[in-house]
Length: 236
Image 1 (cartoon, helix red, strand yellow):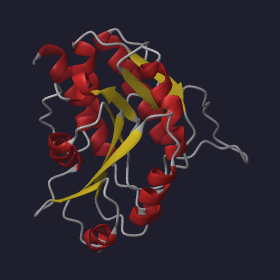
Image 2 (cartoon, rainbow, N blue to C red):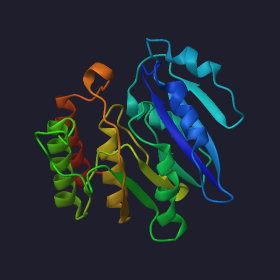
Image 3 (tube, rainbow, N blue to C red):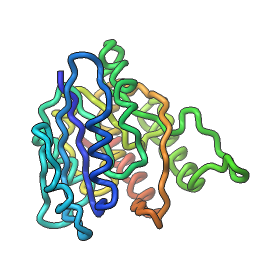
């Protein structure tokens, strides 16, 4: 059995080598192997040069000739994916590949075809102190977007915007994505839920980065997410 790890990358020169190393080191259940697909979205900081240096027979390196967005990079990667199960992995160091086995477990057990790693399932909002919630406005935005998703699609998600979206080949080959940028996250969720599939959530911990460290998502992306959720609720 093969797990495809699809990594869209844009201006991640500082972290791309390390995240690939972490992906390769991540333990999987017995008889599972990895296919790693990394798509450089025409980075300007030398990310593509770092990717070209990577070695490994299980690594597919794809390059956009111009910047098209995260959604476009995911579509490019999906065309090349051959795994029995696929996971989307950001090229920064926020998410821990050591969670792969825990995410795979419900699929292997036959409980679901789709698993999300939820950052918010057990996380409470704290404004002050040493346990202050990182980027509290992002936390609130994610909570609202998850609430809206549940309202529109009858789901019970806690973290619709999570990067860690894992699904079987049957699901990922039938997504037919059209979004080019960050609105791909709600599009994936909307299309899965409209097919009547249950999304199983597994709690995960992350190490969020701030804008000085390279975080790219902006406030306007929340408005695009809302529009995308509404759009795909009422259209195909």
